[in-house]
Image 1: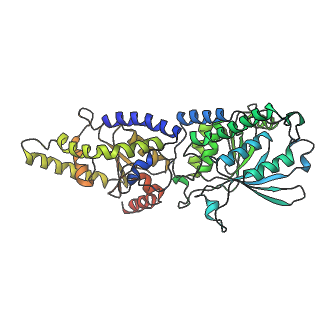
Image 2 (image 1 turned 120 degrees about the horizontal axis):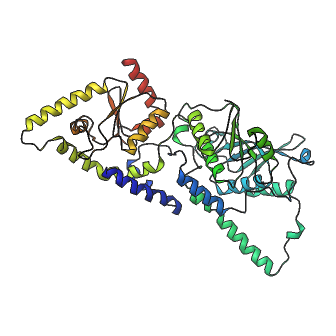
Image 3 (image 1 turned 90 degrees about the horizontal axis):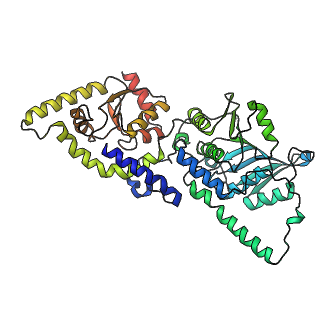
Length: 456
């Protein structure tokens, strides 16, 4: 309970750190077992920081600019189409391109995540692809490649914008004021990246290129606009899961909202996802994200904040757990032989338990780490036998401290969760030999489980 109280306090602290551009993880990299970035299903804190990111860019990527050539109007047959956009969601340069795409009410046939550890980068024979990179096709079938935000924005201005003479520079004080506003706006373009630091910038461990994860044959379709905080949460996860999608802009004033309303039966709410591979159509960012993890990831990652807390708390409390476990079990009693006899019986019981099922996990009912561990196994489709040692490790809440002391004797660790596969300890959620998350990300856990099932 004390550990979990400390965890709760540190969760609050850890939640605030990314806002100021500080990530606590590097403090204890020596304890980080997994090799790929960890991402979790967006929570209320993600919604808050995404909302603040939208406020910082409130002038951009929200509404269709009425002074542009409409891509679905009478001039549309003369306009180029966007075939591919190589993109990283949390890149400033990519963001200002997507803002303009919303304002021009454009469709991108394929938004291709191009993070450094993405599949498209791994398969590139000419080195890393510079992002943003856009491939457009003219109406006569000619393709053109545009590299970098400046080149793409110039292309948009030339092809889609109607010159607004009224807003041309008038000189004098207005020039100075306009220049100051422009600089302030440029500075604000960095704010979303700071607020959403760590999200939408790399492929997560659940969709790592080293894993055999399902890949959609056809691009998913996403109705979205850049300035919407909930759309951002979905696009981040699409990037983190390395999923190609068709972007159908539906900002305020877009005729595409009527198209969306005809699909949904009246609602034009964004985001809205269509998966032509499964026939799924759904609104609500939370539901979409959960669907994406369930369908196109090897597992749903545990809480990112909980992992940060684990890195801070576990090294401090592990010696405490190790010292207290035998004392709670009665090691200090006068009859030492009696204690050792009871401990031997508890160890024999545990050996029987871990041999009774391919996967056995020891937990506390009140521990968030244990709850996340069983949820991780559930999301990975791994069946397990759960053995609870009580509510928590403190006196009055632990059911049988001897079992905890026996686990310490067997594995060298008394902290829970403790997961066994085929009778061998894998460890806890984030740490161990090598730990549940690390073994899932490396692709080792599922073959271990399959071998354990065969040997039963």
